[in-house]
Image (tube, rainbow, N blue to C red; front, side):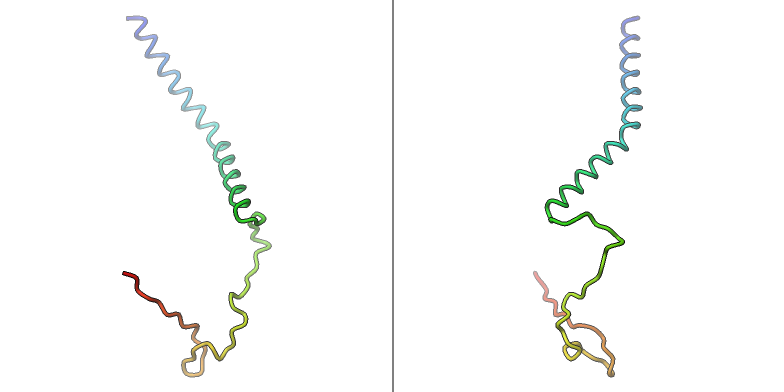
Length: 87
């Protein structure tokens, strides 16, 4: 009977010890995983890491003139996009 209680106590001690250890190490593991994922994305796309301060916006089609854009009552309302349904 004593050996059974000792076994249960050891199992509980290992369980709670690992649970405590994982709570301590989880932030470091997540940081490592995030850093590795960022490196893989950087290598896949061949770009430097994203930086909010250096972000700029460029127009997708700067060669379009104002005549190509539909007008309503003399005001520019936007570009017309034709969508097709796919069954």
